[in-house]
Image (cartoon, rainbow, N blue to C red):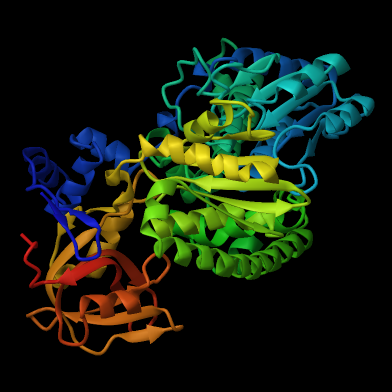
Length: 623
């Protein structure tokens, strides 16, 4: 049953283990909490559990189920046969750059040698500059490509609303294939192209709708490889060297990139996405490409034959360094890093990305200081905060490359949807993030078109994240319309943090064996959250230790003298202030909700807690 905590969060306590959980625990020979976690994620039978715990390539859906796939494959194979130059038009984030790399790699692999016995690539690519070009396909780039002999353009992670670009392709005599995952325009439909591949387009019956852009590009690559190596009547073709190399090595290798993009793009880590990430992380145990290996080394991500990186390490160590190129400089460097076969060049580019990420963090900290002033002012005016609903925070001269990250920070700290806008020379460039249940793209679409004048020059995205550009003098109008839209749709339940607890365990259960079992349930991510545990009646043994002026480290103990370290990161919750507010200190007896972490220190490593919430055990609202 639900219970409200002293922090204002709503604790959703686990129901008593179901019959299915008991049966699953017995069949798998696993603890009851392990089976409870599976059941709450829709895994109720031993067969389903084995597929969930040991994903395989066989679980990936047939790419030909995507509407437009057959037309796209036929046109690419035609270009390869006629040796027509192809342009891949990408995007500057992790999703767009990795999609560019994997699709170019696949097309290069099916391109036969020319008449002189050479293997020159037919594929060139364009990654837009975030500041100079912005998101989406630019007609000027298409004109240059046509002048250089390109006859086929393939978009990745962009293009579903590129109506002007599609018209320009027609005028220039270019064929266009759109591969994207963003939501189409509900009124205008889809661009006029040879083929549009997007699981979210009308009439597409593909069974999984939540693929990222790189995954959609991978589906095209998968279908191309199948068509190019399609076996004749003789089944022995399956045993040829060429077929084995493509299917046993190239596809799993491409899944490394798709896994990174899937995690970075924060699409739900359920269904086919979870399979993709699990297989990709498995392949990342052996990152042979020099640039990727160097980047992982610089990020402090260690791998071996048995242990690859976790989805968390992808999200917080690897993806930010890839994204830093597009945020702070030129994202085409990422493509070059992944494509080069020269280890020295790969290392040099990886080092550049590592430094750009440091630069990004410094710029982000500066803008965050300004945002915190606005957030403090909003917290001090509850009437204005309630009326705003969806927050719109803006500033002059903020770096456009960090506003998406900072929108996420605002949502974490304020608990409501937020747009962060940077003004420059009379133009406003914004990025937004949302809370569960509030469809942000629908919100800004309504604000744009509900009355004259329209607001945005360009906009797009999905339920949880949006991007847009507009004249600066329309920001006040955007605030008004969003407030009106949110008034009837942003419910109190959406604004209250929900903490869904998977199981209650004792501190003594935090052992290396529990860590091993948790690894079986990985990967975790958006839509497939990491399990949360509740430990009751824990004593804070020592005075809380402040780390870097804002984080905390606690030592919790139980009645059997078990002691466990507990880390409290003040990313969304200011823990020193929170403990003071609750009157919690040395000797307090608390109930703690936490994630389990592994401390790999050789002397005092082991399982430890990462605090999500806590309250005094004596609190009367504790069941």
